[in-house]
Length: 232
Image (cartoon, rainbow, N blue to C red; front, top):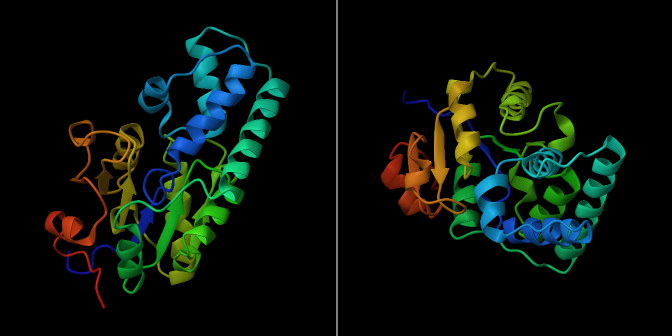
């Protein structure tokens, strides 16, 4: 497949930026106000890959606690407010190798983001790490009816890039870059080849991915996927 991939689709939190600590802090603060404890270990074990709606529902279901729609909306709104405060205070940075990796890919492939985060959060952090111009498509939490780990977002991302290319893209034409094993599993089931990045989980936990790397340092990615173009 000398022309593969035709596009690269990336998750955001834990792949492009080191923002998972922000999300944990926000969840922990909001839940503590509700008398619910959330440990860092539980957050990374249970919640990576969910959007906010799915994460709150998952936590409440695990604790056999009811959550009414109005309450859920309130929690999601408060959590977003806390995250945006942290973003404004610049409590994040791009992950190792990411800027070089994305700038290198951008010369050769259309790039899209598919994230369970809100668009406002994604846009603000992309601007903060000076990478907003690299992405022609962003699919955020509010763009889908079913959030991750469902593959709807990645399918929509591929569809939107197809429109910009004026060429239909199949999932097999796109490389998905993810850090969440449960999302890698569903993306693969939908037909996407996957590159797992061990930022939130160990390499062993990403064994389902087609390729695995510790970081997105271009040299490390090249060793795994030699045909991926990342240079001038």
